[in-house]
Image 1 (cartoon, helix red, strand yellow):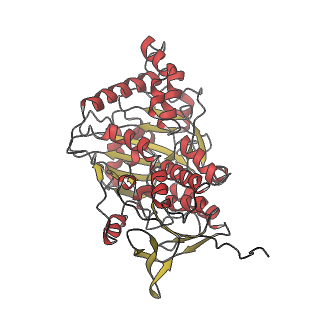
Image 2 (cartoon, rainbow, N blue to C red; image 1 turned 120 degrees about the horizontal axis):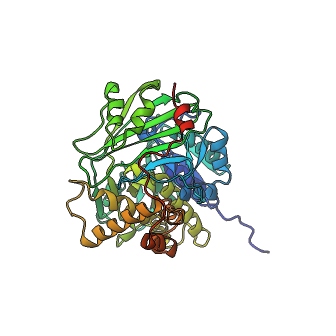
Image 3 (cartoon, one colour; image 1 turned 180 degrees about the horizontal axis):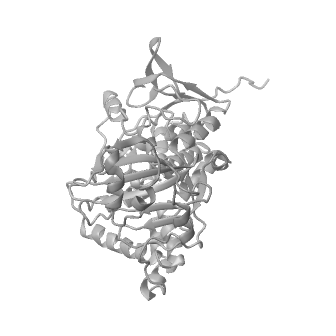
Length: 466
């Protein structure tokens, strides 16, 4: 008679119910029984939690992330929109000043739709969808202490909860714990070498305050307003007005060393007025604030090159900010986390989770989406004074000049804007910037002149008046 013994389903532990952890749990649930190990006790709905302090600031998910979200969790973007989020047409629903001090025209000729909502709402929708899967469980109030196993294979995770310490066994342990990841220390304790790390710190501080949307802007689909910092200036200052659910504006201001915003509510509007264009200050000067000012530092770009390590254990994977964290101004962290999870899921469709050598393959798959976002962020931030011990090389400076010219061209040409957004949204590689629809407008010159100020309509200005 044939052997009818059922094959045991693999098990996976995911450290952290962060967005990266939730994406990874969704990616693994088709291949394994997944348990998310979370230090916090999670809120029941769209509410803040201690483990995501940066959630107070403005978040925008580029269209590359929107595609990855729906690839992992079909319909999840619609769920966010149904609960108050918004798909923003870039640039039609956006008023944006580029780092090289040109205003983008509000072309509608691209397919790009970015997802805008509060981070609390986004996380709540992701939790609801991921934890509803019958193969996914949650252990709250549980702190990860270290890995079990050796340099060849990780076999589990030591944890501490309200009842004491214990060991959880698993076929795969995933570190999605974020920037504060302990993986470098854990791997060395298993006898593995130190990982190569790189850090580029523009020294940016973020300050955020929430406002009630003034006038009739809450009902009018008011555009996102963004004034980007210029790396060639010191200090660099920028800001964003992000209309979100509940008739609110999340207003985030940023400044580099010597020009940082503070937590003083009295100084918030004045800082906005002193940006390269005072449009944000003008919009919020008569708006009603909700609560105080939240300040975040420690926004450096940091990357751990686990994919290049000579030895890597099976049964272990690092993902999300545990691998690479970016200056939040570029808005790429959520997109890369989702794309990395998609890559992991794709690999597991052809490679068994417990197969010899699977750990290295999984780590390399998770790292593939990282480079594009890293190069975009570092390519800008490396020009801030004190950002890195290694000054930009000649090729980097030449590339930065080319990108500046591409941005200036895209600000006036819908064809070039499409190519630029394909790259900025992480849908296409940087080579897209050298395609004919970018090169021809760049060489021949767009017919439209640069705008002299923010392209807000009279009706939008009127809607913003109290």
